[in-house]
Length: 161
Image (cartoon, rainbow, N blue to C red; front, side, top):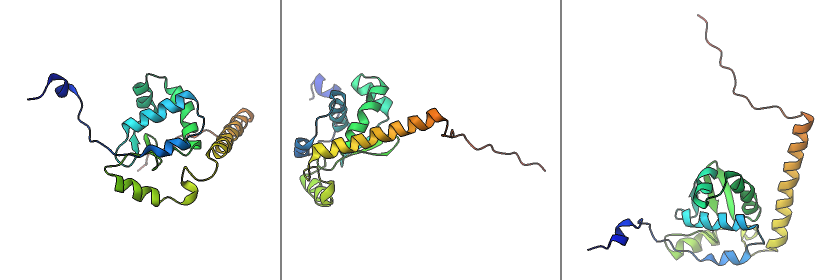
């Protein structure tokens, strides 16, 4: 017999993770930390997070813009990789797996330069985030000068018989 609490609790597979990689997380804004922890609770085995910015914002009771401003920090810190819209991959050193052997294989398969515990993670994060800011400023400047062409859907011509 199950209790009322057990009936209402959502059933989830228990995942295993050694989150030692979190020791190598640089100083991030508080919203980036909150987003990272939320993504860690929403991940599938292997670290895939399937959620749009709107869904992540709803899960954190934040505005979508806050998610959009926090995500580049996680990407610059190499904790999250944007696969495509609505799909994010957590770094293998912080992702959860079905068993410990899966995580060990994933971490061993990483090239040395992709490991969170290699190099000075703080300096590397700051360098990558500065590159992001420089690119953002370059695009804004190009837009202000009018050098950017807008992307429009190609016009489909109707066939004439």
